[in-house]
Image (cartoon, rainbow, N blue to C red):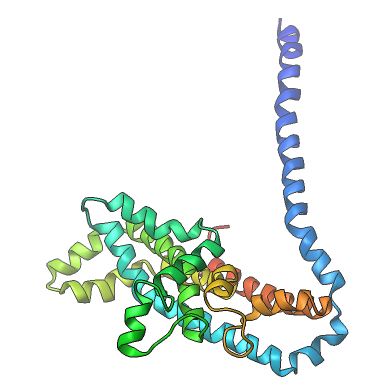
Length: 274
């Protein structure tokens, strides 16, 4: 009887082992899909031209503008996004789900559509941009400030959703203990809440900065592609694709290294589990 039972169980064992094998094969295919384009980028890059390219003024301008605008967008997103995440995580009010959906919409909105929306709102004839220009003389489209606004528009949801998740997951008993000891709400938020959500805030800021650094569609639609003023690194890559493929590959590598640095920051700041 035991032999018959053993023979009967063998097909099920073979079938059970087939599933992990199939999943492993699909995982390998997924890795190939993600890695092979990067391998091609490294193989086709003219490394001998790297030093000369990095010495060119146009590259300095694009890189400088990318860093300045993305960091400015990160600062704007942090100042506005942390309070917004706190409201979404802690407050209850009518229309909260709709508000959250609207706030996270730029994550899935086509970037070009985001650029058009920015033009309609903040353009010289926009319902916000026109009165602002009339009152202050400030024009946002096709300026460096417009680049910052476009990058902040598309990057803000990444910070909000990450920080909101951190606020929901934290143990609120520490805040209650601080309040019991006489700490004000501002002090509790600054000295208890922010340190507790530090990993989530770090990860959200890193993802936000990476999204701002790599922004293309909304920027070119709302701010244009003017060298030294609105031409960031992604826009420079797009322009060089029509001029010199080697330069486009080298500029792409610069952005790739920046993205790797962001991933390392996210890993070290938040996702520490093996």
